[in-house]
Length: 372
Image (cartoon, rainbow, N blue to C red; front, side, top):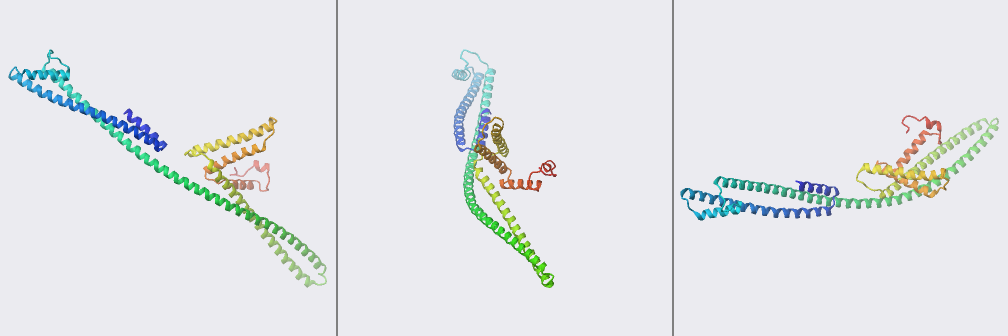
């Protein structure tokens, strides 16, 4: 049973590690032990057969000797043969006197010993069956590990292909970003020109309105029509200005989406350096401790700069902040959030908290319900 428990422990370790080489090593050990146990079992079985044959022979000789003694007090040769068997099996010498009851007790003990050997043989057979069962389980585990390794290789190939696709999409989005920036700048210039033209038109309209007002006394009807014409022009200018402001807002939203996409591309690009512990909680703890550690290193630089009189290395500080950003990206990935989404959520929260577009201590102290 101790050997079976040890094999079960080895089997659990083999299943936990899922390594084919370890399983093959365990196969060889179990096969050697099975061979050894089979040899021991064969020898014990042969001994049992010999003991049975000797017992049967002894019983037969004893019966013949008892009949001969009862019929006639002769049969010296058979008595000598019996004494030889007693000497061989039980170590009883020829000069020792042994009664029939003592011989029966010896034979009973011999039968009990044979029964014990049979039980031991049965236990050995059960143990060999358990070993064979464990061997089959290990073979199954080896096949499962091979399937897992095959699936992992397929996943790695898919991940490599996905990463390549992401790199291609990144290049495409960079091109789109450049195009949108160019169009955004062109729209800004165009809107500036339109505003200038609108100002000029408004100024011209004002001049014309003033001239029309001066000439109102002389040409009332013509002046009224002129005023209505200028009002239409003003409404057209205001409509054009509103459309330009909407276009500018839309371009700003597009620029924000591009920035969010850049953050997501950064997150996907640096996640390849993240370790994998096959346990979500361990990965979350790793990310949280990493954020605290890197933030502590950045704080240490600022502390030495503020209180110890050290000169601060801005590049070193920037690298530490980059490490903090990496752990933030990893933590966001573990909970299913793109980095750009988190940035957009933070911008939305601050814009809602400070609608004037700047920090306000009063609003910071007295926040609305749900503002965290």
